[in-house]
Length: 364
Image 1 (cartoon, rainbow, N blue to C red):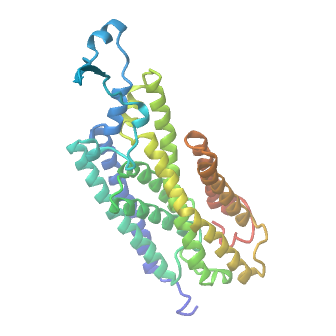
Image 2 (spheres, one colour; image 1 turned 60 degrees about the vertical axis):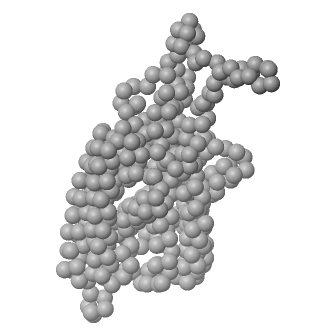
Image 3 (cartoon, rainbow, N blue to C red; image 1 turned 90 degrees about the vertical axis):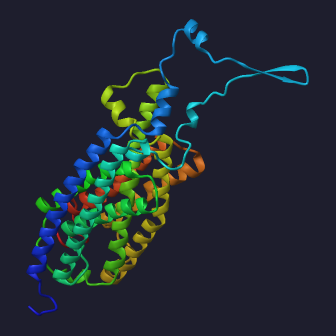
């Protein structure tokens, strides 16, 4: 075996150690996010929603407690002004989500939130170092199999979250579900999907590996962020509707839901991130077709991976089209978005593990 193709076992072992270390730090961040949600006050938007949907008093008491009508004189004419009424539609009108911690106005929750974000940054740096060490151990891109794809994917997903924070977007509410799924993803990677550091098959020795697979990973990470926002939107929308109809949600549901942004903010957030990354997903499919033409002599052959990539594209296109033209906002559009992300997940896991095809070059 020549030096150019040899595997550096020392770097490979360092990579494994760094990945396990990142998991340990992510675990600490997980507990810090839990503390933020436990000790942070309810979000301002949620407190507004609760105030506007409190159980009404009896008619005679409500009448007695009604605010006095303001009387003004204008040119000898008495003008009666009714008090302004804030409607539920005003909830969540702000574009920036309002989450736990400082954004709910609680210093203790903010402290835990800052600790959680700091630990997330540290874990991300350690994990990124693990991915780079894996690449250096074989002198190639670190996504030649499902294990490498997993550790790179989770690194990019956390990176997207940190970029949004750096842009002063109030998305700290995303930290807890993100770190939870990253831990699950890494746990699956180091147990079920682990593959020893090795060289690629000849078909993958192409610069298109860097272009096609890297964009697929970025798209998947952003789609994931959008899916989390969509799922939380469905829960928050149900909670707000129950409050608006006079219902009384359980104590646990109230504690969790009132630390989330308003449903309108979650819906808008999910739509924007999905719309922003959709053109890149289109480019990913085109880049894959060009690479297929170079590697296999045909641009498209309805291989399972190609088919499900196209199905995913169609699903997200339907979601964006429905939002833009048919006016499908809210729950109906959210269901389409989750179906689209489900297609992406099957393309990510299902096709590689359960379906054979030309893309089954490295097992898992």
